Amino acid sequence: MTRLSCPDCRLRFGKAATATLTTCPECGQDLESVGSAEPTLGLRLFAPADSPPALPIAVAAAVPIRPELA
Image (cartoon, rainbow, N blue to C red; front, side):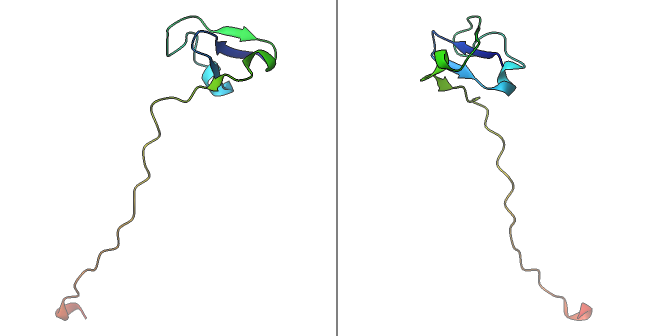
């Protein structure tokens, strides 16, 4: 498996990121491919800045019962 990393930023990229990235999102340099995990040992794993949106929170609400409907 080919792994990509940026030695300048000391970042390594996971499989999903390597499918779409060709340059480092931090510094813009071309990413280097490495054949094994050993050269990337100690590098931080890249985490995108855009976090997934928060899930909506359900809110309980009391609805008054109209006497004519009861």
